[in-house]
Length: 305
Length: 223
Image (spheres, each protein chain N blue to C red):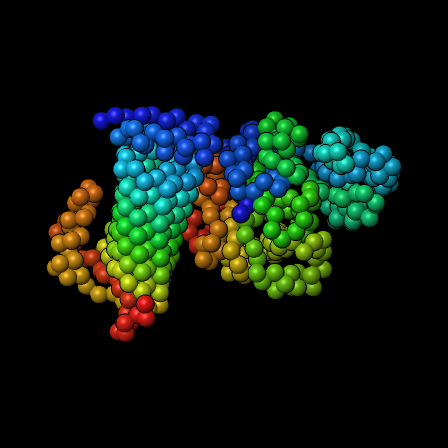
């Protein structure tokens, strides 16, 4: 099934987005027990050209040393933290500086070549937290309720298409354009039709997962100059299969539902908040309203700061 | 009237339904406080008890019930009243997709808007929608009546076999095997009876404006 949730605070100030998303996703826990994740925008406040990396490393000091050696070949490490994920794996979180954004993806690929190492993401304007297990446990492990930001998206995963691991937990990120994330409930049935033209453009796919395909599709469209709302409308036209996709960008969030409306999506808003989720119970955690809108088949909704 | 209040806050879905079933035997009315949009509330209940859900319900509220009168004071999720055989489900707000899906009997009333595929595969009973209804309203209907006071969007009555859809508002398009015609005087009388019963106040002129969607096949169905 999978559960999706997103929230944006209209005043552009930072709020406890981590706490809000945790509540929303806990209410959707029954939709997916395998893994969960968050993309929290607007709270990192990194200097220009600085990036936060989240790297899965087997509990093995040699692998961590190799990661640090690779990183220090091109950047100082400004902040670092080793978070114990389970008995075998840690997540190494650090901040680095690069001369330009185009260096980020090659660095990630270099790191991925190391034994026992998998880069989960690299971002500038949002914080990615994703792991295996229940929302409550992940939120506690990564102190998510203390994370602040202007907006964010999140996911609870019921794995259907690929393995249950940290990398395949949502959100997925594309590096075609900085800081684009997607969470998704559904299946894309014309996967190769979407992937082929993107690969011909030189975009790199790391998995066979359809959500990765969607995030590259979205990022590519944004790169072509489409606005978020327009990209979502294009997605409804181009993507086949049942889906509700929720996109996060540095200044907004938006949802698109498939033409037949085979996956759920509801939204509600007030003067302060615009929120989207798979189910109403998730919205009730952050909004006191009985005016909940069902997102219709083929409909899109978005909010940009 | 003997009433019992169940506070559903922090209750697991099964725990809530167990409590509903236990108390439905001894009380005339159960009031569910803090329902928190839980799924499957009152699923499979067969007592003729009144149930007031003081908030929103999640998916499958009143699924497979036979007898109770359920009143949801806010919204409901997908498949409200799914496969009910007898009883009443009244929802003051709106619902997600598939309201009244597959019902055999009883009445489902949604006072607000609904999502897609309202009344899909219903075999009997009555579904009333006070607002608008979405894509493929009455999909694969096999019986019963579906009344929509607002508008319906594309493919209304898609692959309808039996039963009737009445629409007061606009019909964006009809689905396959569906035809639309004017209502008869008998239809209008029956619509007035049932809608008045559930508190819908519309004018006599409005009753003459209902459209009627049925199967367009001239041949008898094979089953």
